[in-house]
Image (cartoon, rainbow, N blue to C red):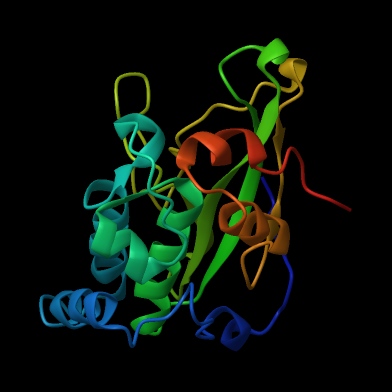
Length: 203
């Protein structure tokens, strides 16, 4: 897929967006400092940040816990969040290390069938000088899902099935979608959020 950048300026993908995508908060800064102290390679730093978001934060729909994490600091503090929160965390970690990162979305079926309805799924695209832009999905693995940090091909969480009304959107946004943030803020529990997630990317 040819990605469509919202902005051609890399600096727009490095902006801190409090309170949801910020790296000066204590837990996020701690991870940023720890990763940067481990390696000088931008690619390796990006991989380690991806693993923090994918593996260090559980997916709330997998755990069944009601807490709604929205921002990067919340996701680390609570130890869980849905795909959007994990994407916010990965963006905060990468931007905090000077690695441009944006926000991407897919439209997927909620429960595996068209009859269950559709909802947006959040993931990221990042830029490495030696690679260019590529997408990764920090959703979190489980049986049937094997998302990996790869630069030569995509290995995302969900295969998109157009025949089921699913859509792989090519846009790379500089900030999380307002509709996504609104749905998360308006949900008292993750059970509510499961059904309040936006169903598609508005034109």
